[in-house]
Length: 269
Image (tube, rainbow, N blue to C red; front, side, top):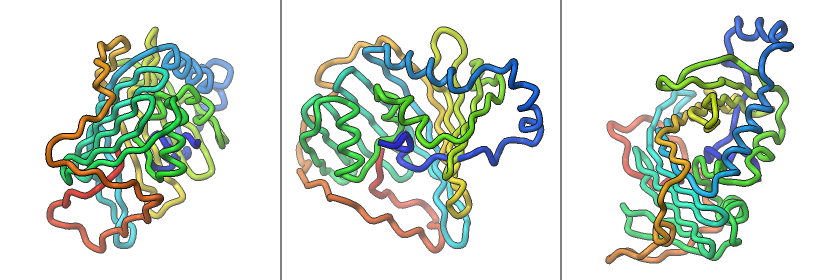
């Protein structure tokens, strides 16, 4: 399962770093923190939590008509209870979906179209996400943060890592890191201190036309939430119909011209 599942898109490289940052890299090698060790600390911390929740504000570039870009936005709220429960609500310009994993079944619900699909999956978060990715052809934004193999997915294909420096995300001090892979640039801001959670993620698909970017600001982290058992099990509302998961979905053609207002469309959380 590749780490690019964290966004439901591919990740990116170091092309956006300033020349001054690159020039400073060599003399900093002896004194700067190891970016891979900081990521491992984040992974270990998240893995140590038996439950957690957070919210995210996400922007996603869509490329159309000769490299022009449109930016769409959506917000998510995520609830995790190890080892086998996950809930993600996503709503925005092109997305209105709810994802349920209760240790037995995976369910995807579309409130706007009043339909849902459900299937049996392996009884663990990692296995269920792998099943959704490989067999059902959909990915859940930021769900890999719940995976016990987060660092394994993260480091796969990595060519270069850089500690950029100390930075702030909405007033909170973080360590700013950057990573290069063949197809992507991935930047990560991890909160400094005893609670090393990710507060910002930026992904650039450097090999795709116009290098579309995906950005997530993560907030409202709760490392000891009170989660009710029924939070993770879908209960069918009146008037909602069961449909089947399609085995795969072809990519949606890019629009030739931007619409005056984006129409609500199906999407992945």
